[in-house]
Image (cartoon, rainbow, N blue to C red; front, side, top):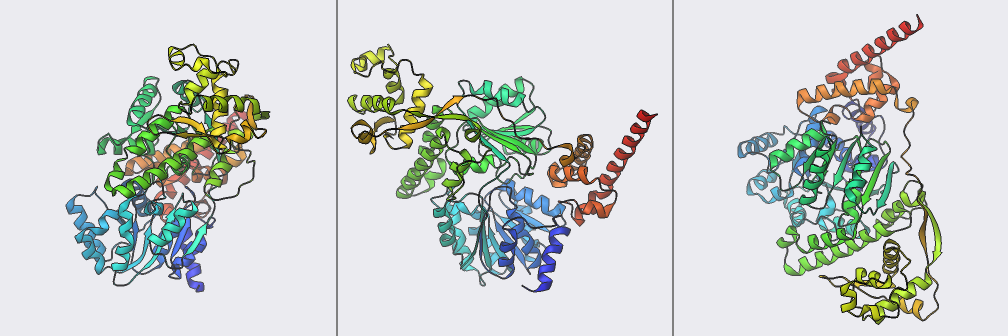
Length: 621
């Protein structure tokens, strides 16, 4: 690469985006695009994927076309780019016809360096007319996993991207980015988008600042309230699987005085937008939402993500959990699991509205893959192994067996022999004709005297009551372990029943011994380590800078993090800059933001220092 181009990319990195150094994976992708090579970046949430295409877009001639599926993502990224002095716009259904024509007119005149567009817009006659003569510098496909039927968010509209690119008179360099992609999905992205010998950068999915935990509480709401009570000043997201749950949780929190907002597809566009803005501006510290919320929301100070219900798959869970800790600070990802979550997700898979658009054969294939992903998600909730390792292995990585920052690694377990217990369970499943679900098997083994047990003659089984001294929770844990290890299988769509798996004979008749990890004791909750004052600066100054940031953000009607992130404010508190040059050394402070906000922040810091010095002198005297 030419020396001048190398110098330019570092200059723009600092002047426009405010960073001194590239993050892992960014530079090779940027270099590939600048050398007119296709590229594929697989990088976790919060790793800085957008800079990988935004920066080269500023160095190349023409307009960069960014294809994105989400209105909120387009809006936030365009607002952030404009704050940094970059001419950018978007085309989606939120614009009026007059606004749409205005954007197209300015795009034809070459006024934008970056233009965001929804994938559905590519097939619109008006846009195709514009694209036929547009000098695109590059095409970037965001959320690229949506093109694959193996992906968790398959969108048929993404299949039109490759024909659109091939229809252009001159094929521009094409790049694609995603935060979650298994090896199969990565291969699909390259093939279905027609990437030509792309530079592929996979930085790994590990987010070391995230702590993972799964709880199976008897009362989810009580557990949630306890978790929130422990985090009174923190900002967080609570995900629910249904609109009904969102409403119930939101009402419960508001009734107890928590500053909560809600978000789901059953609300009006206006109300959703208003609630989103309240959360982004820290006027509501808690967002209760379905998975309709969060994609493309770059709120940097989310300290926790709590899943009130288990998501449908690992991809969704990791993407949603990854919205915590984007500022690099320690953050917690806690999942509240119950067996009903599995039933709810099975229903959602069978009645998914997006599947109705597909032809019958494809729809059934997509549903079966969704069921496979649901099984993997359920196993995660029951796993006794490292939770971080489980996620990373799912995405094709080979993590160490111990991470030291998840519930299972910090939990006290003992390896217990469950051979006899397993034989009792498998024997009952076999002798009862493999006709019953987990609940009836558990009740029979524990000696339930329910009318249904008697009516089905399960009280006549030789194993009836043999495990009366074993808790229902422990019995379910053992059964789930047997399912995970293929000694048992779950089948039946309307009513899941337990059947013997391919390994069952080895335990019943082959003398195989089984051991599993069982909780030895319940230690007190280990909280994520907090940074020292030396590492994070004066907390009083931080609060003053936050208040200043909020006033500036409110006056411009933009989210607070678009002015400066919490990480930038913390660094200001550590460095305590006295002038513009020193403020520019703070990561996240570029020339555009220095010109717009520098004077106000330097003045606030100086006032605080003077007041602190005056207070100190008063104490001394």
